[in-house]
View 1 (cartoon, helix red, strand yellow):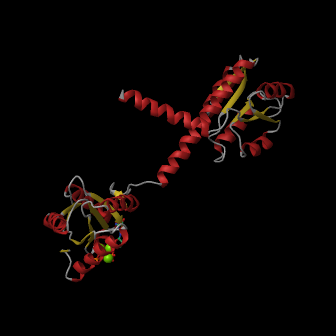
View 2 (tube, rainbow, N blue to C red):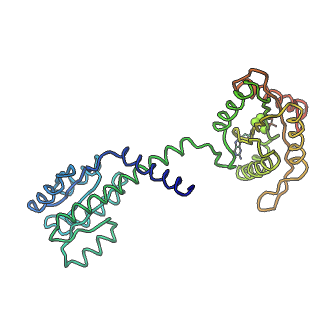
View 3 (tube, rainbow, N blue to C red):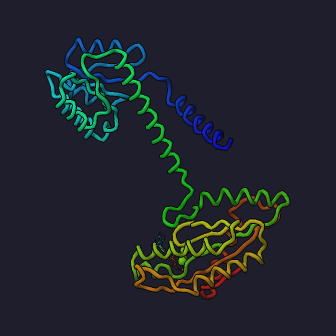
Length: 323
Ligand code: GH3
Ligand code: MG
Ligand code: MG
Ligand code: MG
């Protein structure tokens, strides 16, 4: 049943994608200096699509930069080099991913092979069969729209990424949403939420002495130690730079303080191995801890109190926890 549900969801996604991708009619650019052939192809395709004809490759290259879903070109044109045209489409950033459908003569093996080497997506052998033309065009348009859809979707999810790329921890955006949800639950009579603000001590010195890459290594190693020293219900995040936050649901100040102290000791107590083991660095951190007040539903004041406690830890000499 679970498999069926998953496959149903997948189908739903694809069906949804198909509807967002618009109807089946595609914008087809036909590039052919053989007027009669071009007109026949055009007439055949105009039943379902919106074809336009260009007889000169220069004009066709321009047109291809506009809204086009498929290019059908005559690879054996008399007046221009069809394969050269295809190569130009493939080398232009604006057009290189457009589907190319090459018309070749049935017996022209050499040209056919060259066309495939240039990267045309499909071949249409002359004499052109209308049913085959229509089917091959449709397949290419469908594939193009689906890859466009996936590409847009990927951009979208990258933009909304909730993961910090350096450490793999969640990022601030994700944390804020989670924390506010927890605070709302706490405000409706749930348990308090605690947060800790962690800042690596004299991190600039690590960068200055060993370079930015070693600084990055320390951040990654710290993230691993942090994640393995909080409870499963806690949310460790990279807040930015060398600053981290841990959100601790259902936790009072005293428990949070205890967890923070454990993390501090685990960091200061064993040096960080960096540069492939060549260097051992002693790293310390300062931690500020705060917990939510009754009725407090916003994340900023809570995070601010944790931050203030962290700065107090700094001013008291670093490598310590202030609650
Ligand atoms: P303090 O004990 O007062 O916190 O001193 P600090 O040197 O840690 O604090 P400061 O805020 O002066 O410096 C933090 C440094 O962290 C400065 C910045 O260049 C560095 N940094 C921020 N993000 C990254 C990163 O992603 N990678 C590396 N390697 N360094 C980073
Ligand atoms: Mg800092
Ligand atoms: Mg600082
Ligand atoms: Mg610091």
